[in-house]
Image (cartoon, rainbow, N blue to C red):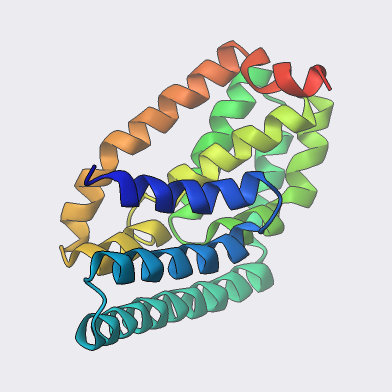
Length: 210
């Protein structure tokens, strides 16, 4: 019974997305409204708790904004130097086998994601990576899922794993402790990568039925 409000909150947020009522961004606002309603209904919503929650959200948002600003600066610098493009072209020039290429791209994206946010990594390298992926006979849809998993792996990899800093702000722990706690999830995503490489139908089965 105590978990019912939490289940309702999660169901409301995810349900609004799957029902097509709200986009993922809008669903965040839906979650805020539902959380306020549940707090009011349970009697825990007071002026003090509301103010503390507002200040906490503001501090976290400012921290994330500063991280994004720093990442944007580094992205621009990387774009001007052309380092991601040069590295991607170098990998393409090696003419690797499919499995070796995927292993090399995994290492490449994880390293790049240590210093750049996920979207920047994809934008800076996609134009160079995609031709070699298609030439290797890799399904673009499958590679898209592969890329999402690898980029998310990089976001919990020090020293600039974006998600690590968010978790650090929420928990108040030092970055090393947060990184150690995130390590099992990193290895779980490695297992997921191995599974989709060995069994590509995990990714392609549902789209093929459409």
